[in-house]
Image (cartoon, rainbow, N blue to C red):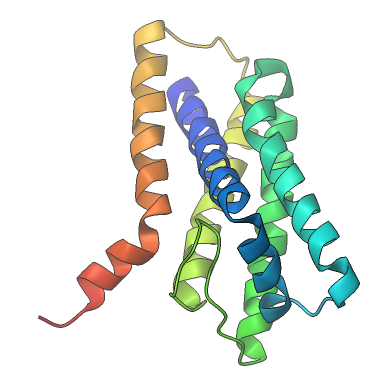
Length: 172
């Protein structure tokens, strides 16, 4: 189970690294997209955006250090729950703003984003439970590399999630 823990922690850390980079590449666009998702006064848009990005930066950094991995997973889980609630509230209000999680996107928010966040929450909780449930030995180098490689593939799939759903959902 050590490799499952490593893989889940790496997956969460890598996904947050991807989202951080995408938001920093177009911070202004990300900040402008927030009022379409959550009701926020104009004066608080940029501070809210900066706070989100700062917390997202923390996740991969904390997850990468074994002693702080549980804290990184905790921050990730808190962010994912907040994002999921914000998306659900926006959807119930009929707001279908584009998802800016992984950069510029025209894909409006929908159930797929709730599913994606749910899967990421599951990965974070799994890693936390396995961290708490057994002594972490770190595993072998080979096993750790395989777990991290699988996490990288998973993170790339999650970063491409909207495109993949659109690809397979379209009628031919």
